Image (spheres, rainbow, N blue to C red):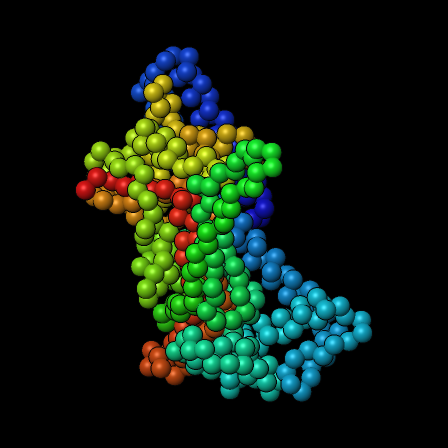
Length: 428
């Protein structure tokens, strides 16, 4: 049913896109927008927003269903439980199959722990869970103390981690376009920074030695700041209901909470006791005339404030509130800068440039940096520690017949090339 709905939504979305482009073409011929055309365009635009949100949600549901099917598809006849709680190797299994079988075992053990606590688990499940416990201040699977965190907990299964990351990206679109590196530990990582746009080649006369111009590298240290979800409480009745899809509900809610916080710090973090945000020290290339408006000229000036060497893979970044303002901007001919689905399979653009939404960005307001433009993969690096942890509070909230869950993950981020991004700031 969801596939049919998705198809219908996409067909309607494409029809709306064609209709909106037809309206734009009609205004080209007439030379101006009529009141009826403006109303029809705005109505279609609002409906397109609704459909895009529905398509995104259906596709997320489809991914979760596919993961659930992959769990059920494992042949448990090929899984041999060892005394240490992990799956034993068999000659018939490849390394990928053994890993998949182990992940399935651990996911089932983790779900049993989440639903009923250690007391309701089989002994082999407790052994498997114990092998994936991280003590306070201990690096996951590293065997050394690096003081990265102040809490211990069980490592979450890979399927949980994927859902959490998806939810984090939903709130902070920057995670999808920055240079993201994943590490198994949270040890301090020295990361090079570089800007070579001012250096030029040279014409060499015959028998003349070239001038030596070295690459100038800076160094930034990427740590692993701890981000927690806060306690999410679930009633005992729901946990006991096998129909309740805990394996999707729990990481979805934990990821949403973590994602809201991470989205904000990746944009405006101070860089001292948290990541350095991409907008914190971003060069203000264009300043608006007032505290709320954004003009066509502002966006053109922002695009051309970057060195052409960076503009090949550039895009805009802003919050949804800024997009609402931009979609009302017209060029000198009265055409909207926002173009709905220029060709099938392509995303909407603004003045021909792609964009993405990040709710960590400031909304239009006094002195706010509401728009960034740049090559974000070259500009910003995010370091994520692969292991994520969860703690279950089985007794603390029992006076209200609830169980608490606390998820936490670690990451850091910094600017690696400040010339690859520029900012638009509203007037004070």
